[in-house]
Image (cartoon, rainbow over all chains, first blue to last red; front, side, top):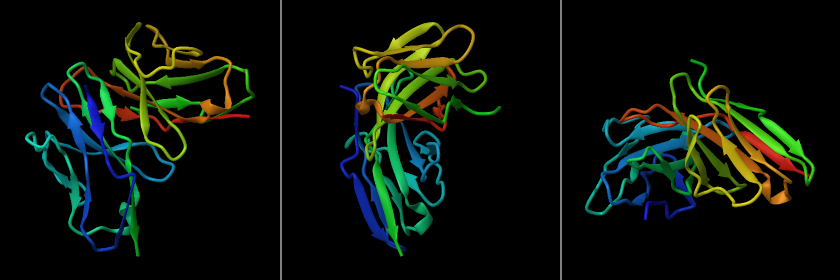
Length: 108
Length: 114
């Protein structure tokens, strides 16, 4: 089965604390994984993808095929990071499957 | 490139009416996806289309919902005889037929059924 699991619906951290948003996937093929962010009342936008291995706004994510995970991390959270975060898997047929999302709240 | 355009942004329908949501993909994109976001919930996949073809409609309710992506014009998501439970944000995304490319999202249509 093709599935993306984000176990936390809500994650609250204090400003300056480390952040880790969990994402696990289930896919028999070679996965392409993405993290999207949705700020309040805005469209979803790409945050980063595993294939480029880049860091955007201080966020990084490493694909761990052994654990089938693609967790999103940031060492020091900022208030403007408060948003909804979605992990997504693209299958070989170009279908994008999203997790249910994690709402990150960064407290002052 | 104007990005993925969805209209209307807001749509109010009475129970039993029809709702038509439009999505114009980015120029050069041949794939369109529709997702539904219920209040306080995440994105749920509905349907994946290419020009004139439905590739995967496994997320579409069996009744009242239909989608098309004609050769000319935008993709349409049609909901017949709307009910209160259809109230949600409906997002469209598009992507080209190339590897290493993400899906680009529209701003969504917020449907309210009264």
